[in-house]
Image (cartoon, rainbow, N blue to C red; front, side, top):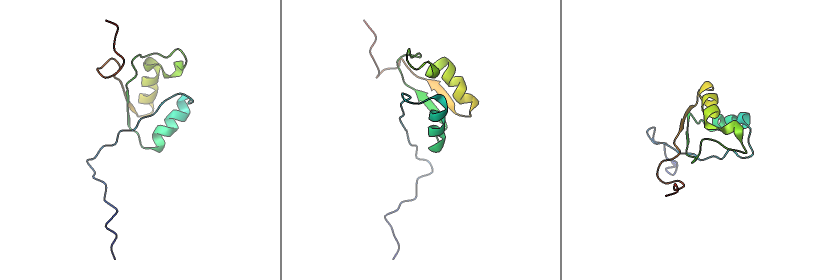
Length: 86
């Protein structure tokens, strides 16, 4: 009997993962991204900088990821996140 419950993944389908950086250093987060085959990161934080986790400031974390072969774009400030003061 042939098992028809397992489907072949669609090669055109895309999966979006979410991850937080709290509790990680750059190397452990990089290892996590690589473990799951992540090739690009879209940073959706409202602000580029963190007063607590400076290793993940967009201006330094982006180049770090790119040097490791992972695309990076900061997308903060787009609709859907924290509203700006009026």
